[in-house]
Amino acid sequence: MIDHTGVIVSDFDKSKNFYRAAFAAIGYELLAEFPAAVTGHTDVAGFGEQGKPDFWISKGTPNVPPLHVAFRVTDRKIVDAFHAAGLQAGGRDNGAPGLRAHYHPDYYGAFLLDPDGHNIEAVCHLPAPK
Image (tube, rainbow, N blue to C red):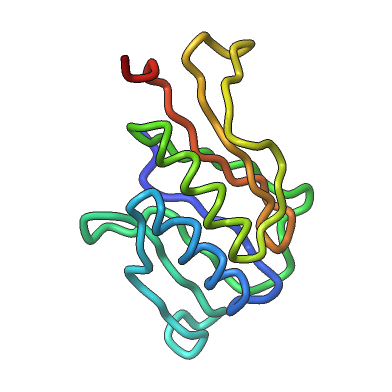
């Protein structure tokens, strides 16, 4: 089971603002932030829910190739809101909200590229409400 993951970003403040906005739509918030003086290496920020950061960004040379991280949500409207908020916060579209039936009939996802090109996804695996 994965406890936490993250990406390395080139512009810490720009990325922090992007993730803060996009993640608000999925119920994630900025929960922890430590400067290089504390970590002994670089600035870091942790996002998550219920007081537990499980996605971290750290300042540095971005991962090459960029990473893909998907966040599971419980409603297709949350996928839509994530995509809209991320675009508004400077993310780039990498796949508008919609069904991806080639994965499975109820796979509803949206993809954004963060400021460094990391492919960040919100996905709902549940059928559409009737």
